[in-house]
Image (cartoon, rainbow, N blue to C red; front, side, top):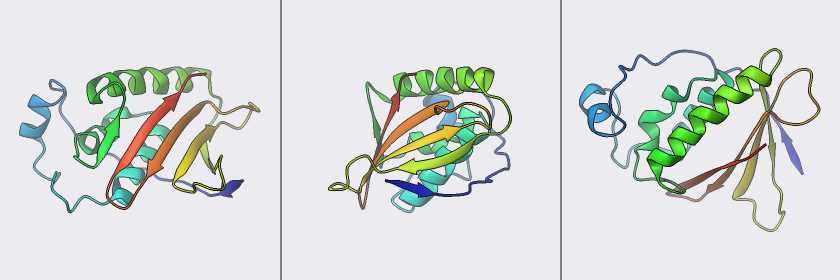
Amino acid sequence: MYIKTQCNIKGSINLKKKSFLGGLMNNISTFDNTKTTSIESIIEALIKACINSRPSYFKPYLISDKVTCKPNKQGFYEFFKYMLSVSKKTSEGELFLKIKIPNAENINVKQYKFYDTKHLHSRLTLVVDESKDSINIDILNF
């Protein structure tokens, strides 16, 4: 089952490059890592990062207590940067998103598939398991 969606999320977030967690929190005054960060805003930042091939857009949201990933957050972020780089190099045109629910019995688990205008198969696929108060993110290899 697919959910058709149009995602034209554009914009920028101005972040200075620092060490992964330590320097990041010192330089971000607008990001609030408390319970006020919604799952929707985390997903929006994730989609924005993927469509624009800018992993730094998602970095401040990754440190939220509501986000889990394997093997750990730093390992996930390094692999996320690599996968975005590869998908950008192998894509033609802008990416667009299709959300697939692979198991109709568990609608909380979704596959976020990013396609370009030329290729039949997705350029990047993320598995997102949402609950009311947390989100688990995994990346499928090519």
